[in-house]
Image (cartoon, rainbow, N blue to C red; front, side, top):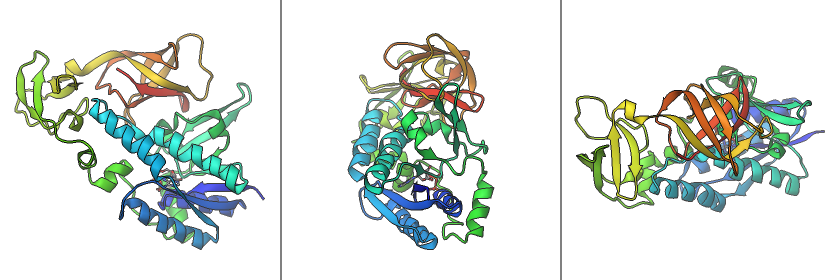
Length: 349
Ligand SMILES: Nc1ncnc2c1ncn2[C@@H]1O[C@H](COP(=O)(O)OP(=O)(O)OP(=O)(O)O)[C@@H](O)[C@H]1O
């Protein structure tokens, strides 16, 4: 019988992923990564729900303590990024270094099992021509999570199954109800897990970073207001600036050297190019020259046409056909060809 380790967060998606594979005849083992430090965090509820699902499906449940790895790779990474004036995207980093990598390693070393599965909405296909695993968007475009998965290596893709890739969320809920899963009606998580467990990104950051008051200025240096720490702002932000102005103003630069938040009208926040670092080529090998692709610079942004120019040391330059508003250092840029994730990386500037 084929054996698979399913990452169980205690949510409906991973519960259904486990139930589907179990029903298909896989020998399923549930595995929950214990991620967050502190009592009463969302993880403790998640672990109990995951254990309940395993009980329902009569499958074993393992819990692996990953709190230190999560603290170093995600919490510290976020805090140092925000204090340096960037807006880091923790999810792709979390997927590679906290979830998929360690889960596959644990599955192989401790459970003699070569495959893992998660409840992500994305698809994987093997292309015989290029001999590569391809990462594809989910059928449900509204739930598609391929943007967060661009950083997975070929080895990780080879060992991963996404049982929900061809379903839409309504199907998932229906299947959960059909199987009578305890998590069937569990509400959708809306935010980043750290935001959800702390109430807001501000509340999370305030636990680690002291207030550092400074000025909000326009691009000529004119003082328009004050702020309580550059780390509370993000490029493109419009709300919560506390400035009355005739036209809408957006954050266009975070100047940590002079402790300034620089604001301007929408035209000042657009750019035709950006540099991307820590690039991972997913469905294709790194090309020798420029390629064209549809690029997403945020999770929910519309893909836009651009030329992708490979550079040195895992870097590329993106040149957009049309200037883009609020290109945010720290967020991921992911380039696609149709449904296929070609590659992605972290926006540098
Ligand atoms: N703590 C965890 N331990 C093991 N696997 C996890 C954990 N958190 C998330 N995962 C896996 O990653 C997938 C995507 O996680 P995400 O945080 O995006 O939750 P989600 O889409 O709301 O899914 P779910 O409904 O299963 O919580 C989950 O479906 C699960 O398979």
